Length: 396
Image 1 (cartoon, rainbow, N blue to C red):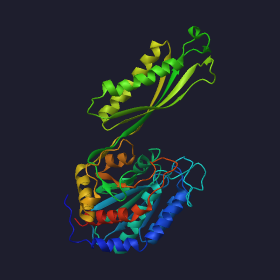
Image 2: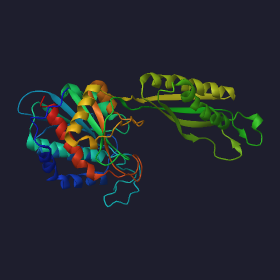
Image 3: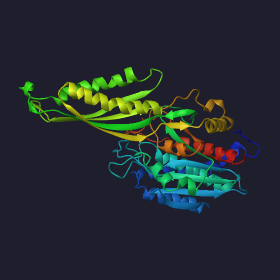
Image 4: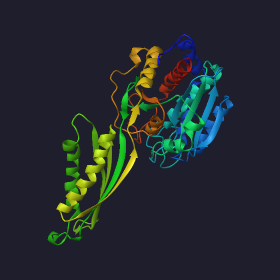
């Protein structure tokens, strides 16, 4: 897949075109931030997105996968087909930014920048509708429910790629700690799989003064938490990646009472399906054996989430080459490393070739923090990138 540039409008024309309406897009982004909506509740957001796209001349389909929106724009001639995806949902977090456009919905916040991703794609969509300097078909995918790992699957099961076929699909995510407006690309595994487990250690309650008459699930749980790290340290190849985190432990209510049971909640991550399956086998086995060694029992509910995000090499090389030709080497992060966070765009990449890339959000609070805020300064360059990617892909 070669990058072809001779049919493109000069980069400064794209920059000027987006600059002419960027203030409107920033205002839109802040409006979306002020009225965040949780997974599969993105009705206001979807309505705004659909209305804007329709007004710009796109063929708009709503209700795909619940609250998803898909828009298509056809170039002068038939040709290739490209899909670009943005996510729309927010998180169940109480915002603590004190921004003038902070969330008006109690307990709900755009703490991951999906308001920004939607705004970036809308900015690119507007420019592409006005310029129409491409052949083939452009498909824009505004996805619900990424945060719960359900939106991509729901759209795909609703016939996304049968109803709106594409030759390749692309997406992006902002990333705090990476310089503002710089781009990162990763071939192969770019983000980790994510699974969860709830382990209930069941013992025998009793008085804290007579522990010999009880079976202490607190002690068994404490030993299990330590033992779980041996799965990574002694079962996983040191050259591979795995994460086992116990994020929650609950049991008992008084200092002098041994409870009947203790509940642990875990998250597991990996870059390969083989390691993911290894964790799925070893963790329940270890939990049961560890509990039994204390005379207790372990009830394990292991829940598969979504797989590692695997970027396709050819499409990733193409995406990187577009960024290089558009912005130069100074805007490309060298040796950008895979992220151990997870992303349900993985399902789209299982269904279609494509790539998921990253754009620096600058020195902001981390993702999923109550203090996070999307950096509006990256909307224009990221939208510029989408325009160049689309025009280049559809010129071939």
